[in-house]
Length: 239
Image (cartoon, rainbow, N blue to C red; front, side):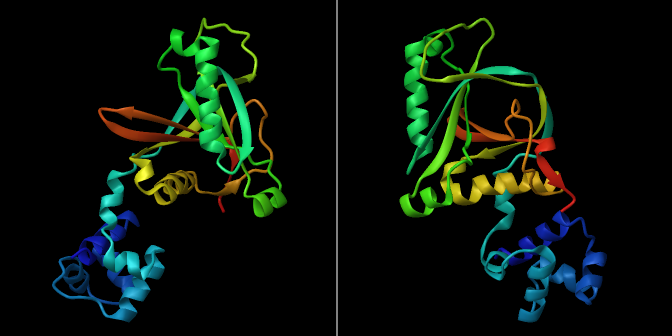
């Protein structure tokens, strides 16, 4: 049964002792202990109260193993990334992510980049300048893919925009096997970074020479990962 483990896990995540949690729930510490060891199942009104405190759904609290999610995400770290050159391209289509990745991989071969640096990093991020009409009527979305150009590599191969991302501080999280549940795990990574930064939203304006957020996918030891980067000064804090 997951309920007791979930209660214990969420309590600790909120940095509450059993005594503090018992005061919030208006029960004894012993009752909390019995809940967490599955000796006693809380009544429905108590479960609803917990959901309010933990900001989770009743179904998640009772049915899911919330502790397993911790293995999916690394701790959030703050990293200062040095400036880097990149070759980038944007596409607006019903499936822009795969379309532009395929385009950039072909460019990587044509330009000689992948011959000179087979492990060149391919970054990606959403392109926000797509009108609501394009999205709603035609199902169009935008995505940018960019190869990081290694030091010493020079090319004039057309078909991309060459740009430089300035040195900047990013909050970074690693998500394990992100596409096992893409619509849960990847947004969950962004949410954890925003919580870490105590931020509620992104700023409307930010420096043109700094990518506000991007993703980098890779394989290691047979496992797929995605690193999510959010520029620490691109968010509105304290919301």
